[in-house]
Length: 333
Image (cartoon, rainbow, N blue to C red; front, side):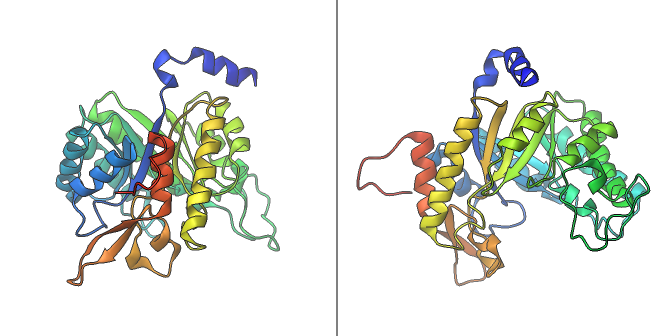
């Protein structure tokens, strides 16, 4: 607790500001829904950050249009750089080169327009140790156990972790080479995966913002641990578990509970931002849960593409929390 209090006291005055954002897939998905339409939803909700995945350099032109449309509406883009790589089959040399190139070219293009970059997305999942594999200390992970929980540095299999580390180093080095005044955000899928941060620190992977994801479970235990690293915390994914698969009203209630909990926890921990997952349902993935995670329905346009449907109850919950409750009888966008 002494470390947490000391960190909070040392934060600049502007650090008390908080950012609510949302995830989306405007570069590779949401086909038929324009960047302007997506940004208009964020503005209506009162959200000021849009987290988007960037996988390839050929997405640069579309990303530029999105960044421009967002800036015109007072919204920033949080790119999460996720190089399109088969980690299992790709060599360390190629992993590093492609990761560095993606970060360098993209960050160079947006040097003066984007200041925070997230490096990788839930990469540590690839390295979680499996039954019978050898830990780095020479002991065998028990064959009768399931996948490791990710709580400790030894919960990650050395050869696979080396590939994860190489992606992160490539992205980080590319960002540094681009020469901007950037902040690097790195983290995990949440759950119990706090050991990945300890592993990154051991391996001298540098980051400025600790990233955490949560879906339903109370994250306070993790925030206590993350605060010990002396860095601000960004929640770059959260929602009711599996969205509206158990009903749209259940999603709305679960999301409301999560947002209220975040508001409570940021009084104690250095949480700067939280991003809902996600803006629109990805209907094309049905029956997978990704088809039900959105705040807005996505419908077929009957011609091989997609168009926005109506808002789900969760949409109005988010808007009410951020912008204040609307008069009785008013409707979502």
